[in-house]
Amino acid sequence: MSMENDNITLQGIVEEVVYYNTENCYAVCYIQTETEYTAVVGCMPYVAEGESVIVTGNWTNHIEYGEQFKVASFEKNMPKGKEDILKYLSSGVIKGIRRATAEKIVKLFGEDALNVIANTPEKLAEISGISNKRALEIGKSYALQLGAMDIIIFLQKYGIAPSYAVKIYNYFGSASVDVVKNNPYILAQEVYGIGFKTADKIAKNMGVKSNSVSRIEAALSYILWEGALNGHTYLPRDLLLNKTCALIGVDKTECDTVISSMVFSEKLMIEQLATTQAIFQPAMHFSEKHAASMLLQIAKVSFENVDFEVDIVLDRVEKEHNIKLANLQKKAVYSSLKKGAMVITGGPGTGKTTIIKAIIQVMEWLGKKVFLAAPTGRAAKRISELCNKEAKTLHRLLEVGFSDDEKELRFSRNEENPLQCDVLIIDEMSMVDIMLFHSVLKAVTPGTRLIMVGDSDQLPSIGAEAV
Image 1: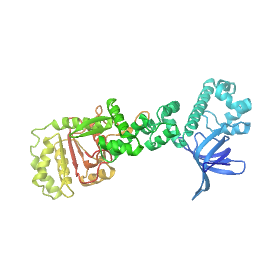
Image 2 (image 1 turned 180 degrees about the vertical axis):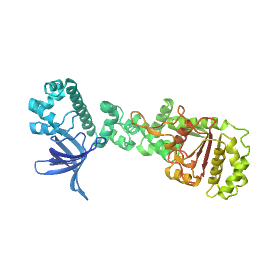
Image 3 (image 1 turned 180 degrees about the horizontal axis):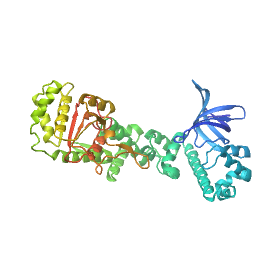
Image 4 (image 1 turned 45 degrees about the horizontal axis):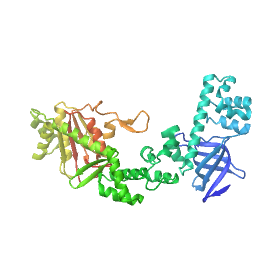
């Protein structure tokens, strides 16, 4: 056991792996050091029984399991003795090898077993029950694991915790080292869970200059996304400059030059709004402009001769619900019939829900297919109960799912696969941000009536810009 920067370093043999999560490499295992048998917990990529490991961290006291060693960094040496190699191979850490196969490999190749698997895996086919194809697959599995471990250990040298190193490797694979060396700030853009401040710490450890262009660019993007979380699709240029310079301590002139360069290369977008230069992230700029264009196309559609006998239906609605619709409420119902898009707004108790009920009944009486939605589960449940009609969250309505590489969420409903309805009513519209609204509009074809209901004084959107 040794001390290193207030951390403790232990070295020993992994005797038992109690738990291992293949996605984030979190493990619970027991290691035998020269003096003690110790419970070790934390991110330990590809840890396996029989390995010699070096772990750095600190002792913690778990309320249920007692004293444990919590890992901050992790290294391992491949097992050398026959017994340790057999234990390692029997652990299942290498795809295609279990206890019986491990025994055959160690019996034939002894202490050279791991070297054979790494460098001449075709020799494994000399063992009964292992085909040439399986031998090569075992070698490939072992090589991938060794490559991943080398990358993770390399990243740890720059202060990247094992848990982050695993995320980086899972995203960039064998290119991880080159990617991080070239521009560590790309981690904040691409790897979920790694923000600007973490990437900045990594860059500092790698010797990136405090006024480097890559650092200033990353800081500008961070400030803009932080603004988006507070509901802003853009920031005025002066405000963006001040916030960025305060964050990373660079000269204002240098920062302004980088903004101009990013605008020129379309990494940022700029709009002149009266006396203010508005700076956008490209995704926000596109979503806002495209949403406005699509909404205009939907709103341009008008419907004629659809109010025939509507008064009869409204009378029936009033009788069924024991209410009396005010003239403005009736006007809203008539407008929903004639307009491609409309907004119903008002404070609590002004009758918005009553209008929604009336619109639903009239539209369904006319044979129209009506979808009811809201931005959150709670809002969807509430409007569903009030209107006695199924309501979905917007994400469920748009059929959210993962992309093919499982790295991002996507909606199945879009321009190529639009919503199959005649009327879409969205309640609590003030909680819908511009990115989500853009996705909704892509799934709505002109000719579908879009009715947006909300109160601008209620809860704000979760992301940038309340619609």
